[in-house]
Length: 283
Image 1 (cartoon, rainbow, N blue to C red):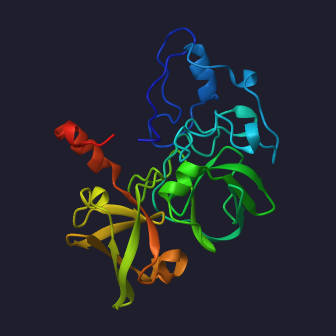
Image 2: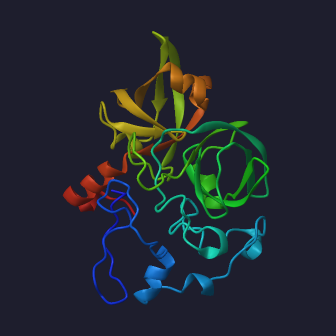
């Protein structure tokens, strides 16, 4: 889906082919205009050169992320903006897969500013999932990424620990590999048990009914930013089976009873519910 953007109109009103040719990732012969230029042609937004840029490490209004970078809920970035307010080439949409790139170390967290030491490369304005929470990079350099964490995020997600799971946003033409993850945490779950199972572990996680209603056996759910398959369900919890690779490369390997985890159910289930029973959706 990401590799085949909707066809857009050119300056003469003619329909141009998408940025990646036939949809297999080939680039068109000529360089295409950025998203900001396309919006400008349609009269939907300012030209990139008219938007204020920001130097590396320079804070936005009131020391936070400016309104062009941070969504109203504080959990996502749309559109993704890079240096000087132009559309970032690293990701065309704020989309994740739940395949963690790295287990990173938290350097500091105070005053709403989270600093993480990581080998994941990102520019100011890029979106990065941290323990399943989509955050906007406000400072980058020296093997570290900094994010401003707003109260909305703190209310919905668990506190950040010493280590966090990090995943950059999906790039155009990259394989999805898992399931569609937004980086919008719906609730915090609590580990009921974690027991060895063969070479892996079976973990039971207690979750609110608002999350369990979207869970089905063999369906997908995101736990601390990791895409997992629901192995079993009961009235108040769900179980997941952790393979050795997940145990070794993510924070889930250190889960213990009573520990908290960020939860994001598959958003497709929400769309289905909305279409079938719109009156069941809460405000």
